[in-house]
Image 1 (spheres, rainbow, N blue to C red):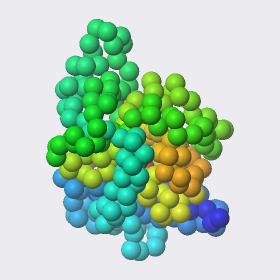
Image 2 (cartoon, helix red, strand yellow):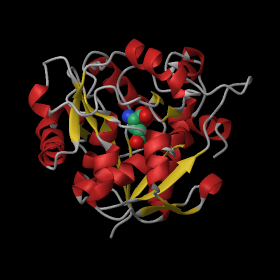
Image 3 (cartoon, helix red, strand yellow):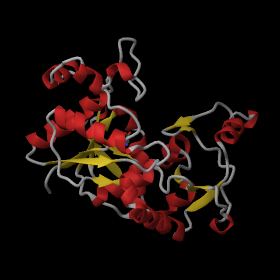
Amino acid sequence: MTFTTRFAPSPTGPLHLGHAYSALLAHDMARQAGGRFLLRIDDLDQSRSRPEWEAQLKGDLAWLGLTWPEPCRRQSEHLPDYRAALERLSAKGLTYPCRCSRRDIASAASAPQEGAAHFGPDGLIYPGTCRGRAMSEAEPGDAIRLDIQKALGEGSLPGFTETGAAHAGQHLLTPDYLLTGIGDPVLARPHMGASYHLSVVVDDAAQGVTDVIRGEDLFTATFLHRFLQMLLELPVPRYHHHPLVRDEAGKRLAKRDDARAIARYRDDGLSPDAIRRKVGL
Ligand code: GLU
């Protein structure tokens, strides 16, 4: 199968050096493999996504020398795909509606009987307060979660191949890690249709992605993505998690970190090659 990778930014702010590194690395790896580089616009969060940011990020990527086939996939145009995936999991009885706010979760997770609070890919691990509620009891403002314990009954656990240097090799999913390191993840939110975790596996499969290249911060989420691929019988890409670009103090860059926005460097007269050197490519 043709090597196919993608860069999937959310149009919620300016792209910074960390995005430039991720996009350039994926683009270079695709070119070296004689493969395809796709751009995907992760705009499910319509409360924060803006067409202006999408236009700017495309301008920045083109300026860096990247090319991709148009039209690119835009998540907001594929809501029925995510709904179908969610319905498939619900039909197997693996989902439940959850009405907990962040604050409810924080106070339940810090209750004395819970012991030390544990963190997963989405922050505090969900303590399971709403587990056991039936989908028929869902109310309009509820999130939908996957019941990991139930889903473990769906088959033997698979693994995935990682090619990034920090975790290179085969990684097997274990019940213990899914239950205590991930916890019941949100699959859909009232204002977003699908969560990132559900949409990313649906999109990667729909786009024929063979190699996911993305930041190290998403390595642990990959165990959940692989689990969802198993439950939804989706094809499985290889994964390559790269180190994050950090500032001088060692902190990872954030969208609001305007000082390192690519647009800022462009305005200051830096060349795309200078950006490549800055990020170590
Ligand atoms: N939109 C996601 C992000 O920017 C994509 C992550 C991924 O590559 O899977 O974090």
